[in-house]
Length: 125
Length: 165
Image (cartoon, rainbow over all chains, first blue to last red; front, side, top):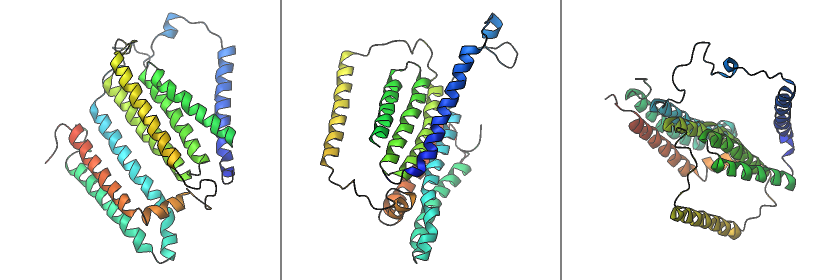
């Protein structure tokens, strides 16, 4: 299929990554000395004895941050084609037709961000 | 090219089965990354280049983060992750739902009558997708903006205990 050739380097990176990572894991597994002792197998926490379980319930605050990241990530997705196309459209005399939709789009999300900010959504309390 | 399809489709299927087979939800989430990456590869072979990159950026990047956060929020312990068999009626209902979904997909694909063999030059690239997005589908684009803003406010209202005035 035409047009996919320039993705061959990507495929090679994936392939080499898998091969090399797998190879070295395998080599370490095959040739590494294994003398397990109780203290070696112990849970390591910066050298001090570990306290309690690591499986603590996380605060929903983290989720809010992740949610905001996702939303602005999706926003940036729409910016990519816009950034690529703006010049082409401008040269064709249609700059405004592409500029204003994105302006409205960013204004809406900007207002959302402003709301978030003013209502303390970005505060960690 | 067909070989590439079979490799990617097989990888997607195996990792998708792994998602629902693993007992530990973190393993399921990691298998889902593999599924999403193989789907991105399939999109590439279907000339949907922009979609493939977005699939990796948002799904394998951002949405998987949300899944991992949910796993951390639920904080399932080992007792809750033990082998459990759901009730028979649940399994029947779920199997039927899955069957209906598959039948619907099958029907939709068999109805499709486009020419997928002779695509115009640059089909699915960021330039051509963007041209359509900002001309023909500009209304949908703005509605997406409203949707994102609503989600922004909704996330704030739901996840924040006390809001400043």
